[in-house]
Structure formats: C-alpha cells, structure tokens
Amino acid sequence: MKRHNPELVSALLDGELNGLRGWLVKRHVSRCALCAAEYRRGDHLREMLAANPATPTMSDSPDFFWSKVKREIHAREGQETTVAIPALSLSDWLGQHRFALASVVGALVVVVGLMIALRPSLAPSPTQMVTIIEAPVATVEHASTFIPDTVATSFDAKDAEPAVIWVSGLPWAQDMTEMKTQFAHLDL
Image 1 (tube, rainbow, N blue to C red):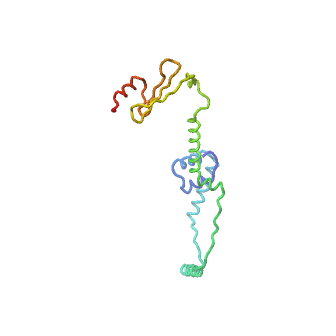
Image 2: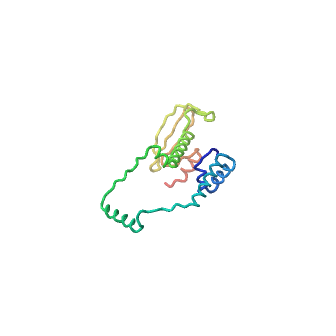
Image 3: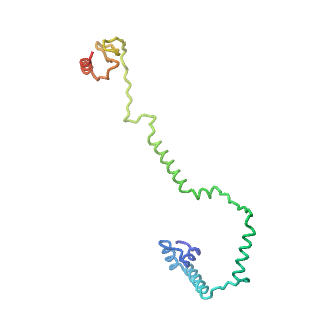
C-alpha cells in the first residue's frame, strides 16, 4: 500500500484482510502517521460500541410484529411486481468479459504473427537463386508399343541422342538402364 486508503484501514480493523494484502496494510499503518491515527480512531470507536451495545426497541411485541408481516405477505400474494433490469454499458460488459476478450485478442495476435512469419516471400532471397535454362528445340513422336495400355514418347533434341524416353503406363525411371530393366521384367 503506497497511499492513504481509509477503506483498507477499515477493512484491516474488521479483519477482512488476510495474507499479503493484510501484511502490506499493517506495514503501511505502522509507518504512516496519518493511517496510524485513522487506525487508532477506528479501534477506539469499535471499543466504545462493544462497551455500549445498542438495545433495539420495538413499539410492538415480536409476535405482533411478525403477524403484521405475515398479513402484508398474504395481502400481496397474487400481485405482480416489475423489477427494473439495469442495462449494461459497453464498459460494464468489457469488465465482465475481460479474460475472454484478452484471450481472443491474444489468439488473434498469434494467428496474425504466424501468417506474417509463414507467408511466402514475394522477392527471392539471396539463397533462392532463380536459374532460367533454355531448353533445346525438340520434336516429339508417339509410337505404339507391344505392351498393352502404353505409348512410347521420344523427345529428340538437336543432339544425336534422345533427351527423354517415357513410356506411359510404367513407373518413372531415372535413366535408360533402369528403363531397360523394367522392360526386361515385363510379363508379355
């Protein structure tokens, strides 16, 4: 407790403060002359009230008083009463739902941060070198094969050898040797 707060001093007198908050208020009262005076004044008032308890006086006997209360209850037994429901302002609603609101805002910050961090960059980074290779002009020929449901396609480049041979219906082979091995093991 850093400033003077008579409500906390009163709560200390009533025994409502426990734990760290009670310890902080006691420490402040022991060091602050103004709060110590407030504490002594409240303590003196409590002692005076305890020494001189108030005696309630009733104009009617207790039995007669309760009979009047019962009669009033029975008289109003079928009546409807309307109770005004206070309208919550935006600040009241936000105060009641502050933890949910903080959770939603935190989740939005995380999602936006992830979107920014994981988005693909528009410009290539220095490690992403883009290489454009000009492909030689090739002629493509399709030939039927004796293997059912397959077609052989040859891509002839300007060089003397074909660049790629692909037989549709077969798995992809990395080189010609592997392709020849696949042809050799076919059941025809």
